[in-house]
Every structure is written in structure tokens, then in C-alpha cells.
Amino acid sequence: MERQSDKLYTSSIKFDKRLYKQDIKGSKVHAEMLGNQGILTVEESKLICDGLEQIRLEIQEGVFQFSQEFEDIHMNVEKALFEKIGSLAGKLHTGRSRNDQIALDLRMFVKESVQEIWDGLLELRRLILAKADKNIGVYLPGYTHLQRGQPVSLAHHLLAYYEMFKRDCIRFVAVYESADVMPLGSGALAGTTYSLDREWVANKLGFKNLTTNSMDAVSDRDFLLDFHSASAICSVHISRLCEEIVIWTSEEFDFAKLGGDYTTGSSMMPQKRNPDFAEIGRAKSGRVFGNLVAMLTILKGLPLTYNRDLQEDKEPLFDTFDTISKTVRVITSMLNTIVFNEDKMRLAIDNSNVLATDIADYLVRKGMPFREAHGIVKNLTDYVLETKQNIHELPLEKYKSFSELFESDVTSITIENSINSRNVFGGTALKNIKSSIKIAEGHLREETRKGFND
Image (tube, rainbow, N blue to C red; front, side):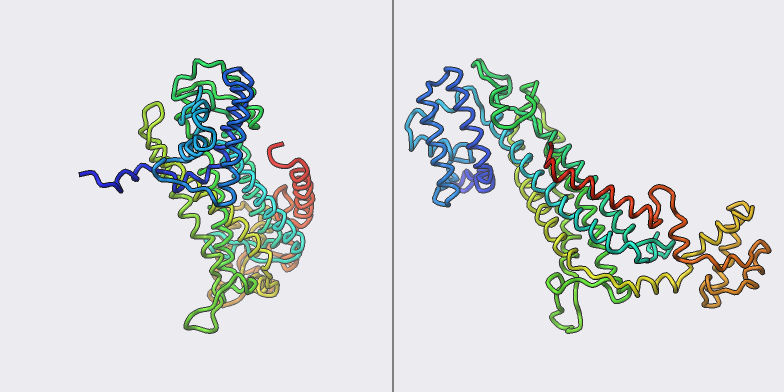
């Protein structure tokens, strides 16, 4: 026996009411267009638009009563419009289906969402750039496999994250372009017999392009996949940054400290300062990945055209937007409080063998094949590890015991020389870093001046 509560199973109003602004805006423009085309009278069009505006204000002010009986945002708005202007409300749906209506709402929501995320990423990139500029002369080990590899400037390390988030901005611009296609006029699946002015609607709603196939238009959610994909990649970058913050603020590394507002104490151990914000930022990637997989799974077996499965596309979208937009803001604020421990970073270099590659390169410049030089320096580093020394502390005589090509100038290999010798484009040499920062500052100024998607 069917229970009354089962009837609510297909209701989506509890979450798609969030689309009320997009839904009402689209409906108002549709009504205006019907009036322009003579499908409605100008007076009818105006009455519909006035009624819709009243509903928008009621929802905005929190006095509108949503009903699960009218299962989605479209039907709730339409029911309220009937109550305000009577049977005329039924003319609003002329030449339109809920299928192309929801496709429009979602595209508008995605366009607005990516602009907000892009703005947040721009601010994060600006902060990273400022941190890099202040730390050009701070050195630390660069790592592979979490093992000390070669010395680098802290600025160079930070700029790697700048590049990641720059690519994220590019991806979100592409998401905007993917969503910037106006579907209204596609009807349920085959278009409409009414003489709609789709170009006028697209222009009024700020869309650059029109959908070209009505069946695809009502069933396409690729733009949502693009959004989830860009968000998932962005969350990877956020998670990597958070992971390094967790590592660097540990007592074992002690490379950095976070402001007190972005750490929490232990309920039992009073000495603890846990990087909870970074850990939560790292963990949020999981739900963003899950939303991408959910959307892929929803779409993978759908025949053309619209299927009710697509009702499930909204909650993952809202969750991913909320997660990414808030996380970007919080991580930016957290990173603004970070203080780097320059002495501890330098000590990590000094108490290591990060100059081993430079010493191998030294032998190569003396004419030795690199593979042979690599083997000699490997034996050399094995020796210093066994004897608990550092490679840069060895006397010349010990160097010569491994190769007669070593001369007194081997002792001139220093951290500073190592860093500045890597002056190939993209390397960690300080002049490269300064140039990269200037170029990035110029790009950011231009992006800020133009604004999103200009």
C-alpha cells in the first residue's frame, strides 16, 4: 500500500528552491519575449513579470511558503503566480517545458558560481605571490619522495602552487564557456511551434550562444561534469597545499607556524596545536571527488532525452560549489597567517647532502660522463651517511679519494651557488624567480582589470 510519505520521494523542492533567483529571472525574460512576439499582450506580459517579482521578493525576505505538494521550484513559483494573478499565470508556460527551464536555471547557476570561485582563486593567487616575493632569499630543501633532494628558494616552492591555482582559473573560465549556452526554446525535447525569439532571450540573460539541438539541450549535463571536474582538480591542489602545511607545522619539520585562529588544542594534551583547518581543507577533496563520480554515474546510462534521474544532479552541484567556494576563502585566510621558520629550513639544508647533484655536475664539467659521476657521488654520499658527516664538510683529500678530478674549487659549491646556477627558464635561480613574480603580478593586474570572462 502506498504511504502518503512516499509521494514526497520524488519531490525536489527541499533543495532546488535554491534556484529561485535563476528560475524567476528566466521566467520574467521568457514572459517579456512572449509579449514582444505578440504571443502575449504587453499588458499580460507585464502582469506576469510583476507577479514574479513579488514572489522573488517574498522568497528573498523569507516569507514565502514552499510546499512539497508542488514538487519543485518551477511548480511552487507557478502555483504562487496563480494565486496572485489568476489564470493568466498559465500563459507563462507557453512555448516552454520544465525540461528546458531547469536546463536554463542550472546553466545560470553554474555561470554565477564559477565567477565567485574564480574571484576567490584570484585572491589566493595574489596572496601566494606576495608571500613568494617576501621569501625569495629563504632557502629550504626541495623534496622528492619526501626525501631531501636539492636546495630551492621558498619563493620557488610557493610559486608552484601559484601555477596550480592559475591553471584552475583557466579551467573555470572554460567551465563558464561550457555553461554559456542558452537552452530555452527547446521545449520538452523537440522545440516549439511558437515563434520564440531565442536570440533576444539569450542576449537578455547574458548568454553568448544558443543550443543547436533541442534533444541534446534538455538532456545535456556536460557543463556540470566540467564544473565538477574543474572543482575536483582544484580540490587536489588545495589538498596538496594543506598537506604541506600539516607537514611543515609538525614538530618534526617546524618549517612554519599558523595563526592561533587556524589551529585547535587537544581535549587531553594541552601542549598540542593541531592544524585542523588544513586537515579539513585536505579532507574536503573527498566529497568533491564523490560528487564528480556521482554525476558521472547518474549520466552514464541515460537514453535521450530528459529522464527523472537528472533530478539528482542538483545536490552534488550545490555541495561542490559550497565546498570549493568556502574552502578557497578559508585556505586564503589561513595562509595569510603563516609564519615561516627560516632558520629551521636552512638547518635542514645544512644537515643534509642536497649538494650531491651539484658535485656530480662538477665532475661532468671536468669531462666525466654523468652516469659515472652519478656513481662516484653515490659512493661519496654513502660514505658520509655511514660516518655521519655532511658532504659539503669533507676536506679535499677525502674528495680525491673518490676521484682525482676533484680539485680545490669543489669546496666553492655552496647552497647559494647551487640555487643560482639553476638559471634555466623555470629554474630556482633567484633572478628567474624575481622575473616570474613580475610577470605574474602583471597578469594578475590584467585579470583584475578585465574581470571574469572578459
